[in-house]
Amino acid sequence: MQDAPPPESFKLTARFPTRIHRLAIPLEEGGTRTIDLVAPSDPDALLNDPSTEKRYKADDYMPYWPIIWPSGLMLASRILSATGSPPLPPAMDPRCIELGCGLGSTGIAAGLRGWQVLFTDYDPEAVQFAGHNAFKNGIPIAHIRTLYMDWRNPVKETFPWVLASDVLYERRLHPLLLAAIAKLLAPGGQAWVSDPQRTSAEDFPLLAVEAGFKVQTHHLEGESLAGGKQRGQLYVLTRRG
Image 1 (tube, rainbow, N blue to C red):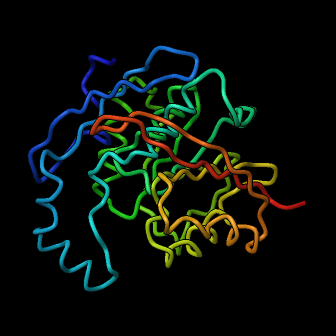
Image 2 (cartoon, one colour):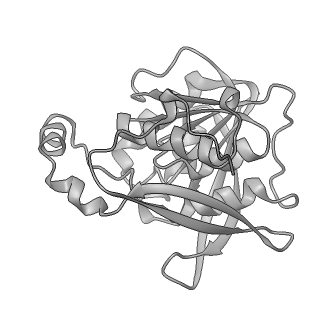
């Protein structure tokens, strides 16, 4: 962990109390890797924030970003593990983007494997927390970028690796996600989309095929924060042809 204070761009200006979650991420070859996530102490308190009500009326927005989501941890475990399927993409161009980063667990795992990560989310406070958490987990400053981003207007840049976890909770968002991936994914790249086996995600592979992608499905497994086993799916999308 880094002892130096974070640079100005990664300092938190949170409007609410925070706490640190110390997470032991299990590795497929055995052992664990620790990730620390600073998060709001009471995520439900954001539901009463006046700005939340305003954004909900405008765009059905809900503040899901402060929650530590299960398939984000499962995907972090897969990324941090030296073995397993699918293998990580080759890091000849070691840039990746995380969509809907929330607190940043998945992108942090990629950063710990040496990738340069652009953390993006529909909530500006989420990307602030993700950048802060990435720095505090020892990822070099030069490997961290953060950006508020709406999937309807993705950044004009392509990446060999696109990451997204726990973003398939509403079917109406799937076409937006796939359209964003189509614009962001570099030729020959891979998009990894994980989900904790929600019923809302069952049609996602078919929609991805219809959108022009090849899809491979891999099983994920991890420990639930509430205790017990947690299962999920990892969809690997590549461009057809």
